[in-house]
Length: 238
Image (cartoon, rainbow, N blue to C red; front, side, top):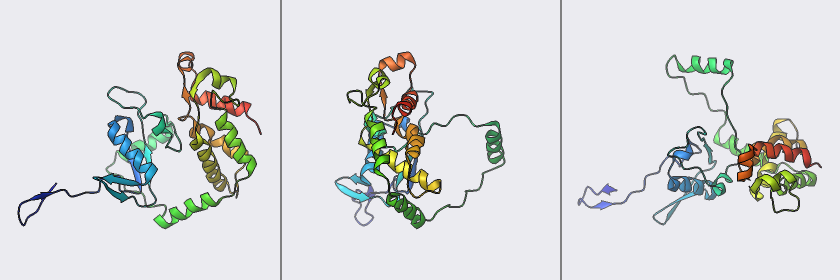
């Protein structure tokens, strides 16, 4: 809300918030209100923000890194499964090693550490993104990604026994898509021009663990989604 200095009237003025950035870090996203979570996830899916009927496009590249605190759940709003599905990976970060912790202490106890230099320009990053998209992928690799995803769905004929016992909802098409995308990127990082089945296997856990919804029996038996993915990789072979 702004004041018109000429006649003293007021008018609504749109001011761009923190979502208008290339990289957005949503720290402890489960502490954000559901309306804020929904707006952020809409930005991720649609690449624009709508305020008062007006649409504002977000610049490319745009991606979100979110953290969740798994220890304390009081006063939090865990993301619904449909919103979790929009994240490509769930990467779990444990305690640092003694050497890593020592470096953290040294870097943060002697004043403000300097900001690191940029690793890429905007054009460099977008070029790498296009390169990953252009990587060719064989039918066998795609078929394996589809088979792994299908085997996570308890009502699917491809479901393995562990899935039928412990899973309420399996992986949707975004799971297969992101398995292939992550495998492409891993192949390039390994110096190869096309992914192989082993690339799918290496990225399967972080890509799928948050897309598999375990049932109450799994919780009671102490069966995690990581264990389910590990069992899938043992049973689903090319």
